[in-house]
Length: 275
Image 1 (tube, one colour):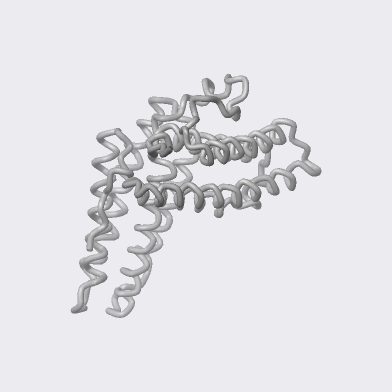
Image 2 (spheres, rainbow, N blue to C red):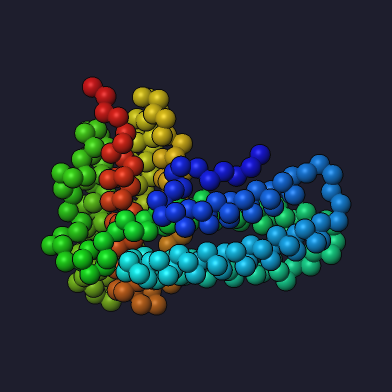
């Protein structure tokens, strides 16, 4: 088994896609080492993989962030935070004692699990948006960026009804953020985000059942994208948001809305309509 860089991971930006392929190759290299039947002393191989991963990720993140700076991508700040998390996590592995063979196997297994989860979810929930969203100042001059318009219609009645409801929930949260009241506003918005999380899960289930019923070939890619978005919602940290609530909540809502719009326009609209 290897971890493949599949079509649903393609951003359309050649340099970034090529570098992602190399990161997947490093993941596969670690997986092969972890899953081999005969285990000997992997100290040098494991040390080499961790160092190579650290160095290559640093190069890739620099290229990615420079590109996002050039196009004034509104996700740059959030991307930097995610990249910092990855760097810190990988560097933790550099300080783990891997002299013992049993410890090497444990570290390899943990490393593969972390890389597989982070790479897929980061690419599918964040990197595929690079270059797809209008620069922040253009995005916000729309009279109501949360309005559900005809351009988002897929022609699938249930899907369109549920998309409209998702936009309504995001719009409700957005209005509260703009008229933020520090006494009760934060708790109200957290409640709405919880509502969004639950309704999104329900919608994705309905959408996947529809795709399964028509034997849609893009179902697996859709499931991965849905899982990445749900993971983003599940990992919202209220304590972190509360540090600077209005600004942090606004940034979070812009991401959620941007992901939803991109997913509908570039993925959901490809789902065939049956009569």
